Image (tube, rainbow, N blue to C red; front, top):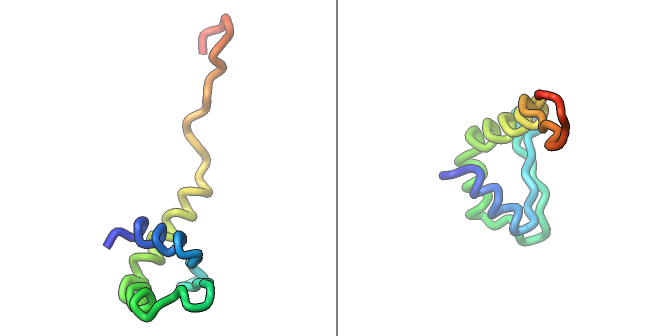
Length: 76
């Protein structure tokens, strides 16, 4: 299973998923979280938590690429 596409599909159904420590939390409209989706979430919980933690760590990183001024007379 590709975690990113699974989470994108959930978001398309207005189902939001996040990590809270070792727990996987979600918020969904009534009836949106079907038994099949619950099973998928439980089955792939560790993969999803790992993906969410990695995404959070990536978002906190400082960007190493800085845009240069496209116009100017000095050497970058």
